[in-house]
Image (cartoon, rainbow, N blue to C red; front, side):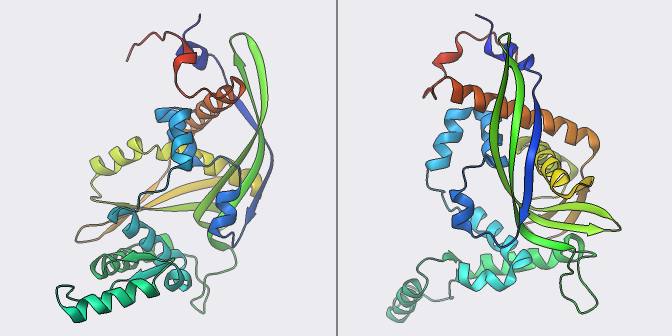
Length: 297
């Protein structure tokens, strides 16, 4: 049997996007119910395998402090009018006292269905938003201070594509549904720009580079760029705006280079081959189906 990794290297996958559309105001439920594969799922496939991606897909998301701050930061920056409907800021009360316990109980009862964020974390998310806004939203406002018509925030895309690859001597050609959400999509001077917000502990070159590699920003950049380019019919550039979660809460802009896009395209195509091959083999629950694999790490 040819080792699985060797078959994967010789697959030479290509993807043809058949249809891609950008849609505004897609609510969270409708987005989640769409069967398309998103970049987070493909990242897990690439790094950990399809069974783990499938398990993560159905597992309830653990709402950590870092996730809550990051989500609040995004909402305050991109959808400030929706913050009150999505989040509840915990009042500063002393829960050791009867009055404090009663006030907190009332707060919890009034906050059902919302994400609870502690007051200090909320203030940090606001400082982060204030830090990134002059950079990530630069050129996105009209003369009245409103977001201009060529800029969209929290816009979703849905795409239909076909993936061609060679597998163990056979030519394989399968349809695939894709989806994603963009933080900011803007057109300036005739150029289409995707901007993505990131929250990090530090903005040092080392920390940003490590986060980019560990979290496969390359795959996200390429995946989003290719689909948006097809939907708009124009070339796309990709920018990351990274903001610190620690003082002094600064922001830096990083422009994605062509080499990083090319590397990310190879990564998401590899993940798609893994996904499609897994589907064709009957969705096994473990890695037994790959047989012995030669390791040269």
